[in-house]
Length: 91
Image (spheres, one colour):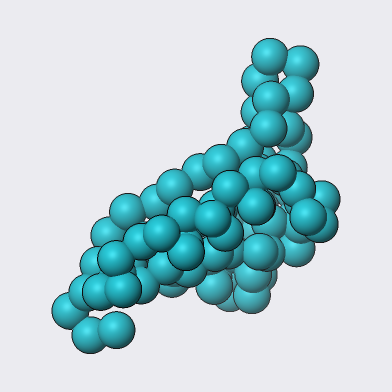
């Protein structure tokens, strides 16, 4: 959508059908139609953090996520709690 705000939504749970993903899906259905809403589902495909990989060429999934961040006006994170913190896949 040209000149409309873009919201990137990321669930911290990689489990299919997670409550967090359902919450983000619910938000999508209740947003103004003039807003672009992207529900990112590639968290499980991201490589574990490794600074050696932070160079060109970036892994495809990392480059794709960075492009989404660049074009987004806002980001919503929805994550489960795991031992009083974020799950490892989200860190």
